[in-house]
Image 1 (cartoon, rainbow, N blue to C red):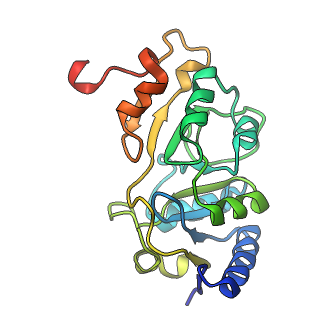
Image 2: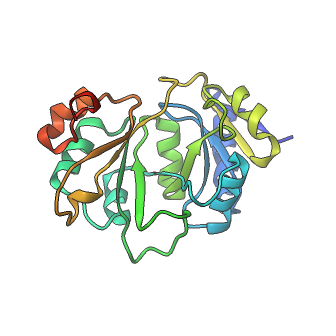
Image 3: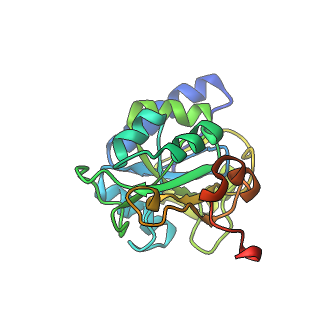
Amino acid sequence: MSPVYDCRDESQLLSGMRHARQAIGRGELVVLPTDTVYGIAADAFNARAVMGLLEAKGRGRQQPPPVLVPGVGTLRALVAEVPPAVDDLVHAFWPGGLTIVLPAQPSLSWDLGDTHGTVAVRMPAQNLTLELLEETGPLAVSSANRTGMPAAVSIDEARDMLGDSVSVYLDAGPSQWGYASTIVDATTLVGGAEPRVRVLREGTISRERLREVLGDLLEPDPETA
């Protein structure tokens, strides 16, 4: 059975981080904590590992995973352009529960699935995971659950759903928020005829908070559209 490391215990933390790095390097899957819910992670530049992630969740290529990054520098390396409004969002909400979809850097040799040339990027507010990201590089990460089931907010929930499809489980206690990140689509800010940020999923960051940063660049609220 795949090991679980209680990362609140320093001795287990060191061992767990080492084994997680090794598993990622071998193209295997790791469950890790984030500030929102637990995530299942794979090397973003290992297509076989990413497809293994999707299979573990019961998903296909039409539902590509987001990518977690350790900072804004990595964001700039992964996307074609960071518009000023996205800089404002990052300054306001990163690290934290906001995932931003932008056109991907076309020179990157990766395969996250059917992304149509885009990538969804987030910097989580979870020190353990940020440390791992600094060492592994960008990770494809989706919520640690089988598709159609609630996202795991504890390591036991993740393990019950994913079992031995995951090589290493990193336990940091119950998730801080317990629900998923907000996802916004900012692709039209890069060369779009009608620049507008769309909310694809409202989670930890509300529309009201987004509008405080974006103003009229945010799509109209559904009730006023």
